Image 1 (tube, rainbow, N blue to C red):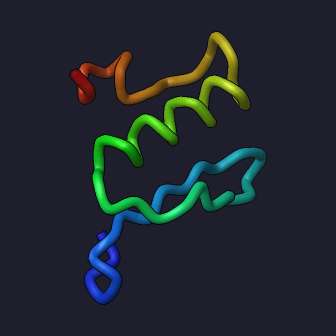
Image 2: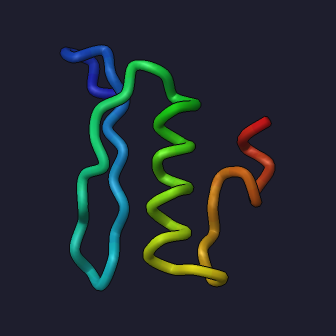
Length: 56
C-alpha cells in the first residue's frame, strides 16, 4: 500500500521491465487486475492470485 495515497499500487514485470497496472483502493480489485495482466502476458504459464488460493 502506498501510505500517502491510501491505495495499492499494482505492477507486473515482463521481460525485466516493470509495468504499472494502476492504483486500487480495494486490494481484491488490484489482485484481479494483476491476474488479468498475468494471463494476457504469460498465458498458460501465468501464476496468479486465484490459482494460489489468495482470491475467493
